[in-house]
Length: 328
Image (cartoon, helix red, strand yellow):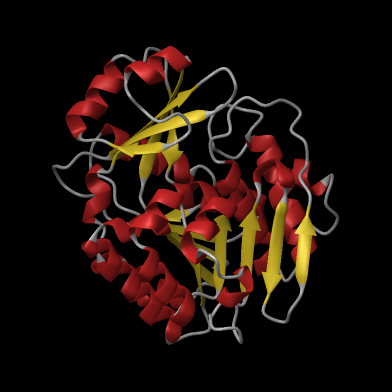
């Protein structure tokens, strides 16, 4: 397997709305707010027309990598309910190996209510539900050991149960040739667990992917290079995305690669842009492509994802990327 993802299995429920509605719900525009099941049901009931897709940060990344041609798998917990079935069918439709046993009974499958405003910004309200039941028993040693990189979702740090799951992934990777990857998920998540993430990057993580706000929350005044092997960290590669300004890839050998963006044909919904970039980068990286090419694959993939509603791989994504990036 090229890439194995471990994260919160969430059904994305997308719907269009306006700024007044977001203010009325007292939600921070562009942010992510954790809600309970009652709040989720209330938002869902008032959503009107919705689009439902398998979601969760790392699940989106894995779906993109698979659509590009990676041999990819995913570990995440859903419940045996309608949304759980929806998640399973959706992620498998992209060629992802997903076999984690479903939870029987409550809590319900997690969902993220994504409110998309006319400017393409997305405001997320997340009910974690069955995600919180993901545990060490769901991790198979052979599956981790058989991957080139196992990508851990930063949001898993929010529960002690899931941290034990991260620990099992780290231990399984250490007994094999597999690399440990980490995506920091959200600056607020980093603020909550800064020392935990610093320990992971000092001791266990070889590939870190994060946006500039998340990296700033992690490092404070320290340089990005402090995360690299030989400079106090354990990372072989650190990828920092800068939104419309592109991305920067740092290598432990001292190489720094600046990667530009690919302008979207149309900006519809920014949901999953960073996830798509990560999926494209990891596809290239696990194929042995150089950092500039891997970053370009990520940038092109992201540009096609934001031109649609939702974070799923667009139809024909591999051909679209291959048309612009030689070697895909």
